[in-house]
Length: 256
Image 1 (cartoon, helix red, strand yellow):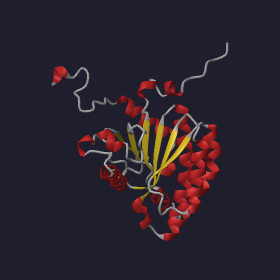
Image 2: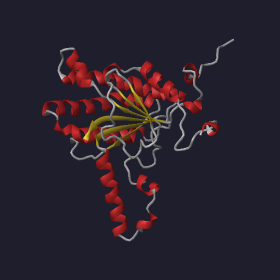
Image 3: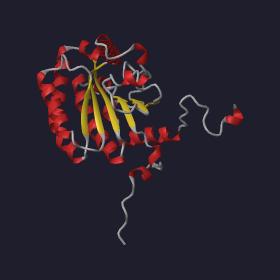
Image 4: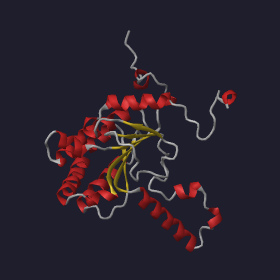
């Protein structure tokens, strides 16, 4: 008898309802990974791209709905020009190279963050990747590129102020949903799980509005060494947690 394929979530020992719908990752430690090996920082970024491919593919395989990767922050422009130029070339190369993989895995690609001052070559590859994958219905991959959460909130406030000035929005009509609709992630569910690599314990201006109720998971390994087994450990940890969203949770009334 032919064996039925095993649901990858069953292999992890979790039920489909326990899988995070949206995972966000702060990909930290590329530079330290390279320094520890006596290599230039850019080699760490290069090695980190292999981790991106593995994690995106595995999230698609597991049935995760959304994956947001913090790739280049608005503050990263302060880094040496040589490193920035390398990163921009790496992004353009990665997008060209990974489009077939995205198509094979039914991945829809989006970018969040300000487009200016990203180089034209990067914008071209971003736009082509978004257009090519727009019809895919599996994992939605959001690349936070030139992203800063405070900038995002500023842009959302400007959006609301413009609508109010035009007479299309009354201040008393502004609700949480109104603000969320002006964020870069409008229409995307908030992250359930936020993973940060390299052992750091801060959120670094990443999705400040959206991670209000996200479960936090700190992984000690640097991003270039992050592989699917580390992702599995984070998901299993998430599945074991009780999410209360301000409530006391089922079965805890007697202990209150």
